[in-house]
Image 1: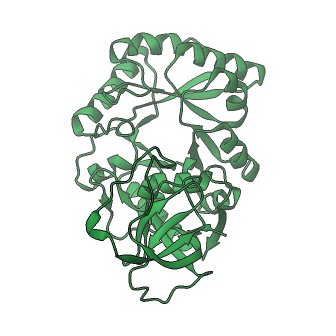
Image 2: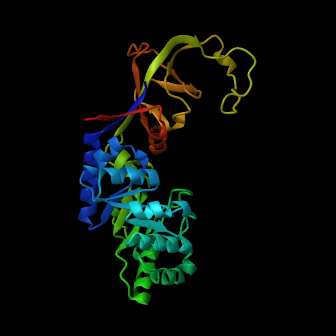
Image 3: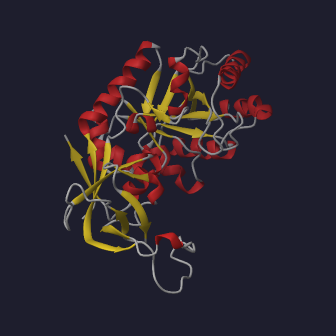
Length: 357
């Protein structure tokens, strides 16, 4: 059976590296746990790092987090859905928001529960995902400040996730200036300017982070050591906190080229035949994962002589080359994954989740 492992030591060391960086710049930060998909085994290891705030974007994940720690501050980092309002107020201490009517419902739900619900209001700075338009921002804040049981604790923005718009000093200076404008106009202190995600970390290292940006939300760099801005890995951080292991369920030498009339395959693609490969063969291993679990473009075999050559719903076909490690049926093949790969595997109920120390 295929399984994924989380290396506890490597996760801890990645966390220590980031914590040292942020503390040296007097910046607060929160791990973004949505990659873990509410898995309690992995969430416990994350919480045990000593964090006091955690971010997620699924209500079911909030329940898992709260069941593990009654006191940790939970931040819901997506505009809440109407049907989830009561659950979010009950489970999360803070939520990210862009719609006045939604915040009004949060206010009502918080009143019913006799709670103060904190909100961070997101501003649109070019990524065109969630965010209040800049020309409407001041009026938006004015209305929200009037709502009972709501405390505005931050201003934030999202960049990179959809179109790949990169953070730079211009965009983050805008974020800081909007905060100053709101504070001056309404005589209110906005504690957090949340302009940072994994993609913004290189700006700290290069001394380009504008003054005032004091809160980061970090997922990918924590779990994968990724320099998202440059699509590389940070020196001194682990990019193999997670590993995927799949078992060989068939191993045979087979022709390189299929035989028979070819139509469209499972993914609606038609194979182009390279006639120069007629008569050639490869040592093919089939392992027990497939498209139900992950797309192969998010996987990399750790053994560099192994190549992914095909996939179907629940099987992955590999070319073992010369099979220099003498693999046989029942042996395991190890894979590294990118962020979306880990996310898909964590969402698969068919993949066992294990810890590695």
